[in-house]
Image (tube, rainbow, N blue to C red):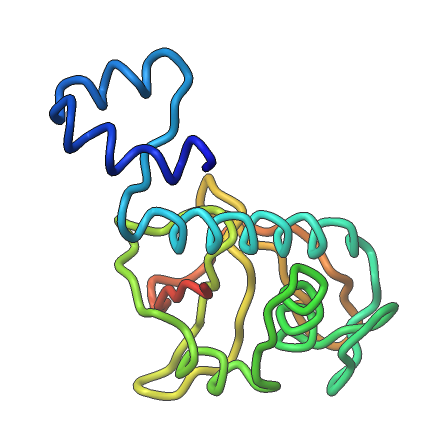
Length: 157
């Protein structure tokens, strides 16, 4: 029996306060929902690192890597390398993501630029109001400050 499997029976016998002591001395406690959040954070951080590793790669409309990208091609490629499949276009990716507020955004979340209800661009949030993205024809994958207030945020997980 692993330590994780023993936690529920230990908690039942010793009480919740003792479970906190168990955690403090190196035991494990299963917390509902935490594994999913931790998994999403791991995928997001991996995707962010992949996007950053593509710095300087040329933009090409419709390209999904590994050497050229359009905006949604970069996010698709980055999350695929992190172990998560995304749809092809920025709008489809927005529809697939869990929508979050700007206040709750974290590094690795997707940033969707929109005009009205139409999503036209996507990047990966890097923190400090910056994104990794493939901007446009003639440009390269780069880190850039978010230039618009017309953005929505989505989490993949």
